Structure formats: C-alpha cells, structure tokens
Amino acid sequence: MFSNKEITVTYDPKVCIHADRCAKELSEVFRVSVIPWINLDGVNDTQKIINQIKKCPSGALRYCLNKKEAS
Image (cartoon, rainbow, N blue to C red; front, side, top):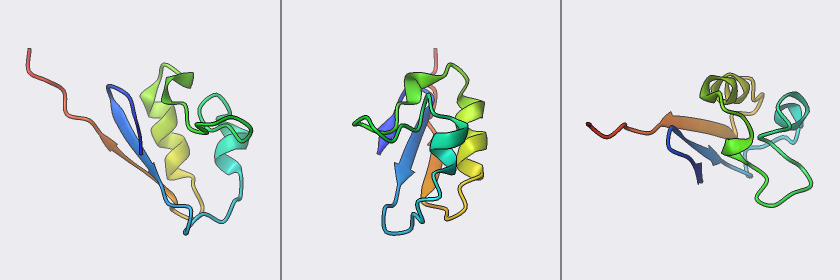
C-alpha cells in the first residue's frame, strides 16, 4: 500500500500481468528500477495517477481517495 495526503494505491502482484503500461506512461510515479517502485509524490496531479491506474490492463493497481480532515 502506498499513500500520500490525497490517495492510497494498492498493488496486487498475483494479478499483475507485467504489461509495464504504468511505468511506460507515468514513469515519475511507477518506477521499475527503484524501490519503493510507486512514488505518489512523483507528480503533483492526483488525477494523473488515477487516470493511469484506470488503464491497468490486469486490474492489479487500485486506488481510493483519502478522506480530507474537516478544517
């Protein structure tokens, strides 16, 4: 599980078909040669991360938006 203030991303390696689409299309977040391989601070736009996760052909990547604290 990977989280920042806005989003939590989960990855299921048992489901992943290793298409590498995430790493090829959003390499600032999904990195193949660095651990941890998901860096949610790689981009400032959470919607870009969401859009990329929706393109995952296997469904191994999932997300949920974190609840914002009341001010």
